[in-house]
Image 1 (cartoon, rainbow, N blue to C red):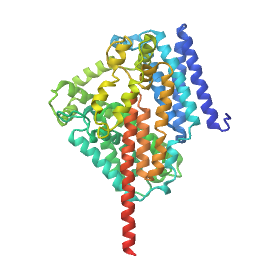
Image 2: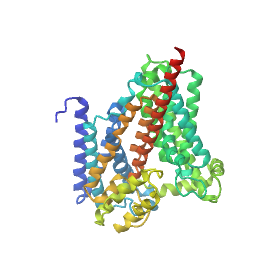
Image 3: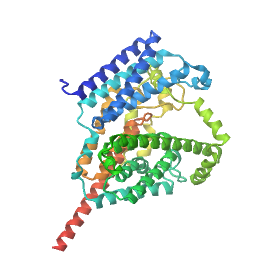
Length: 498
């Protein structure tokens, strides 16, 4: 294969770089110095790769997003945890007491990082070979449908999310709060995915140059309100929703420059962009702090208390001595760096394979109950819980940091992760086809935002990815039906005026 352009040569350097990191980590199994070198080198390389991807949004593919995902979870996060271990005077001993946390056992971490670095190199190479450049499908605005269709689409999905929040189908940490509910409702199943993608739609609408100032302000306020709602369901959801919103917003940078009326003053534009990052950072910090206060309110109040009461109580807890006590305890019990510890422990255990149970469970969970009548029975039979996996591998039956790599290894061993990441990337290869078939501007932004949110999320099992693509297909069906209905209505109106 000939790499004829600059981007291809850059990608090749990253592939070789992560392979070198993998070699260092493998040597680190017997020579700990090389493990620390591989971890530091791999984390720095991951940051450069992230910078490269963000500087050229056209390079974003499902495989490159997964590469960033694993780089954060298996290289950058563990580097932070190892740095804490090497500075014991700044960390509580509780941090080092978890079964999968770094406690000086270099061999376990080195095995996992060796394997993860090879997977990252594979993903970067696949990303270069892939023609699925997600943001390229947002370039030609002329292909998109009428404003009426976009308005109806966005208003409908916004009302759906509002109904899910008000009815209790989406609650604290995304858990359904309807009493005596035996399964997740349609609102609950779709609402979470839509909620995290809404800010991207709102911010793109607000930053268009031909939108009145009052409308811009309303969309910006709506974006802040949605971020506040996301902070209730989880800190990580908020982080990735903000990140995907930034990526999509800056892809529309010509619109941003015209909107700010400083297109000719590039240094001011850059300053505005810096301010935008600063404001987004404040949103994330405030949202994370509020979510933590909400967690404290949930822990200290009875389970019968409604979510609205806990939301109000959380505001009182912010900044209180109770908040500081819980925050210190949380810092001591952080899961940072446990992903390679768990993967390495699975690889060292030589336990029994599940022979595809985790993959089957992901497929079963993604099929709507309306189609699969015995879904609950099958989900129980093919359950891929941490307890089941850990029991087969002789590990503690505790909540464990699950990822595609851990579940793939639990299914079929060493070669499964190589194939599973290809499967997930190919699964999201349907996104450009859905965008082209639908032809709606707001749906295209929604589809890309949902893809970014899903593939960047660090600690999730296979079910998360299958359910996200299912939700996207359901929303596509709705949007396509809307296209047909409004198209026929418009044709009938035109015939009536002739």
